[in-house]
Image (cartoon, rainbow, N blue to C red; front, side, top):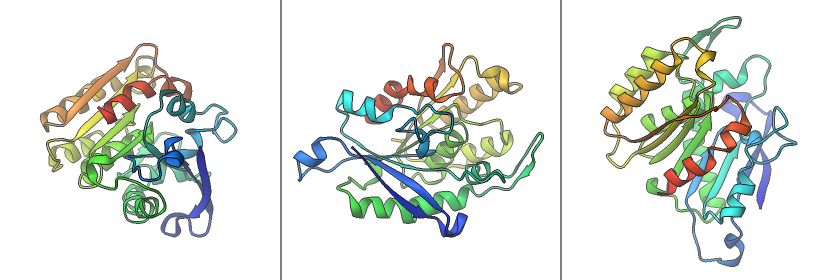
Length: 252
């Protein structure tokens, strides 16, 4: 089942409400003594239900988890839908310039501070989780993929594994490289990262950027799974097809 409720994030959007989605495996209710690893996800409205998804198509995460009997809690947070580029601001750790938009001022650090110190604490208190780092994962796509990279590198004491699908590494190439180079990560850190073959044309030199990031991650001794998805596109239906790959990596 998917538990749902509304929260506010005062430090980001004041009293504006946004939805939380928490997937619980069937065994959660039949095995009251069991505890579970937790996967935190960005863009929660796109993860479970078509009717909530921005473009009418979700990842189908509930169906996959139910069908495979994957024993993991998934906690997903709705993004900021403000027309003032709220999602871009909350999902970037770096200021950047976007053509046709102008400067985007980063609020990614505020987002992660809330997720680590407020949201995770609430999930651990409300549900039977395995709260330790080795059982705490994070995932997202696009700007959420960039935030996953940021979370695994900068909050490595909290997240041991992550899945960055179609990460927006074009946002601030040099800053991302510096972040990876300076990061202090534990040797058991695991990161899944992919990009669709059809996406490379969306941004100049994207293939080289993706390869550069993957190389830097491996040079940091991060256990990196890097894939180019044949025919992969920048959309939920494409990311849905990658669920078996990244979930198996997170739980390997």
